[in-house]
Length: 196
Image (cartoon, rainbow, N blue to C red):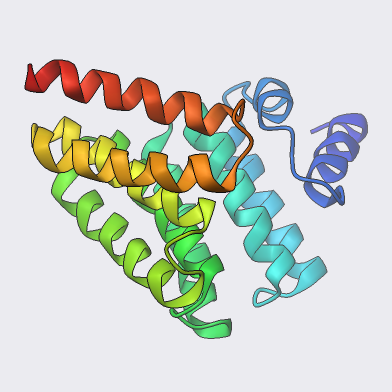
């Protein structure tokens, strides 16, 4: 790895804002990403400490990059590592844990392991009810993701109920032109078409 590409990777890793997933993925997708991710994780763990919240955030960001490249098993391992640290530091009854669990569920779902993903989505929903309540957009996100999971399992009636519930929450909590509302409506239309 040249000095300039190392500097670019470090800038991506330690920037105050979230990683630009598309830019990072394009710049670091030359086939050596697995080694770079291991290096980046070791570097971030050394810089922050393995049990620092910033390290967990970077694990999740790197997992998102790997997932965007279709490298689901690697993304799953990173999401699971982040959850392990979450469980040890913030516990499992925390909204961040639920959000990271939702990330893991998404990558498990993307691999076609729908029943396993369903259980993870449901756990995230339970945590959401207890921590952020049922009117929060993040809770709606968990419901919507489970609704899409139900769609792929051909459980259309349950998918419809979940997506309708998520849409009500989103319409109450978000601006009318928010993209999550449009996405939710599109998913609901697809489910209703299957029920017709």
